Image (tube, one colour):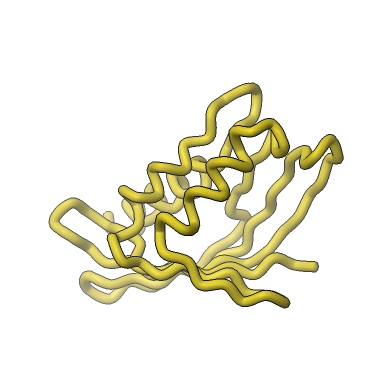
Length: 132
């Protein structure tokens, strides 16, 4: 049952960025999915560490100001390990959309850490790497 719940949280996380077909992306839901004080890390040439709010705001703006449309990202494979009330997930993902009028596709890897709380599974930290 835990794996099903973690799968659901992960799917909801990816769905938060979806603005296809005029749908409004709901990145604010990340506040519910990630524990307060959660750590978010973007790797790559410019390593960036975000608080939850620092992560949400620029993405909310990008997904609602018309620059990034028809965007979605989805998990393509994953491995999840659960030990009692903690879990770790390592997964590959793809993404596509139209940024500043130009279609694009990409892929990368995300790692997510979870804990089981009184409200269910929540993300404590995640990091991602976008393939060049």
